[in-house]
Image 1 (cartoon, rainbow, N blue to C red):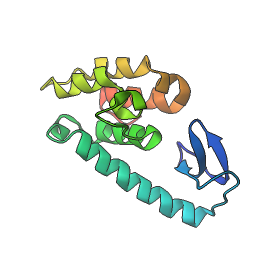
Image 2 (image 1 turned 90 degrees about the horizontal axis):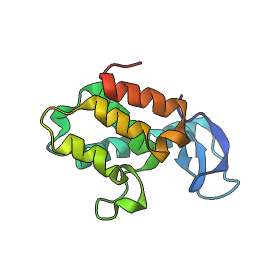
Image 3 (image 1 turned 135 degrees about the vertical axis):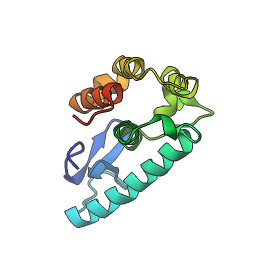
Length: 142
């Protein structure tokens, strides 16, 4: 809720109309109240958690709670993307970052965070991305 803020009326947000707490709206001018927005947000968070578990299956032990939450936040923000088409966007488009996680038993988290900080996502998202990168690098909530 903090990262997305509340929008009662749908606004254009990069690739879609969004409303509520950063959720896809059915179209321009759509309206949502806070109660319905909170419910929709919960559904989207549940989906992001499921996507995290699917993407990092067999590798989740490498994440502490803070890093898992940081990557789930990224998935919520940009979507998972498609493993078979990383150019579509979403987390799967971070090929170098994902390879650092998948190919190392001891993940170089500072390098992972540095890679994230050099991305278009980082430049677009601003303060949220700075916080997420710090959390990925340190494993501590900031």
